[in-house]
Image 1: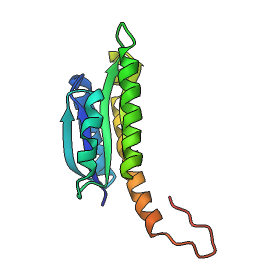
Image 2: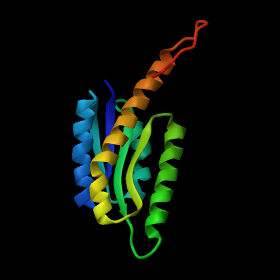
Image 3: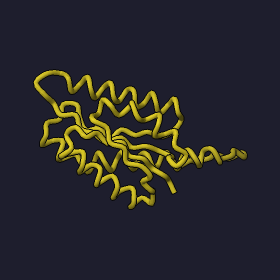
Image 4: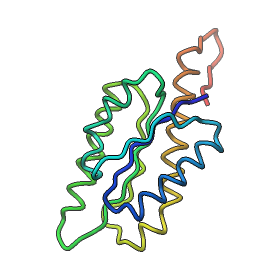
Length: 150
C-alpha cells in the first residue's frame, strides 16, 4: 500500500478544501493510505515543508494541492512558476514522488472551481503510480527480455 502525504495551501481555501476532500477520496479509491495532511499558508510556502514531509519513513509520495488565482498583476505567474520549479527540484533531490496539483496561473475563481476534482485526482493518481512504479523498478531485474514497469 502506498503511504501518501498531502500538502495543501490554505490560501483560496474555499477551493483547496474541496481539493483536499477529493484527493482523500481518490487516494482511498486507489488503495493508498493518507498518512499526513499538512496545511501551509499558500502555494508559495509548499516547498518549505516538503523536505520534512518526504523525510518521514511512513511517506512514499506527496501530492501538493493549491490554487493560484489570476489577479490584476502577474503575481500569480510568479507564485505558480516558482512553486512548481522548487517542488520539482525537491522531488529530484530527495528521490521521492512529489506531484503538482496546483491550479493556475491564469485561472479565475470560476475556472479554479471547475478544475478542483481534476487537479486533485490527477495529483494523487500520479503520486500513487510513481510510488508503485519506483518500487517495481527497484525490484526489477533484466534477464534478456525487455522489462516493462507499468
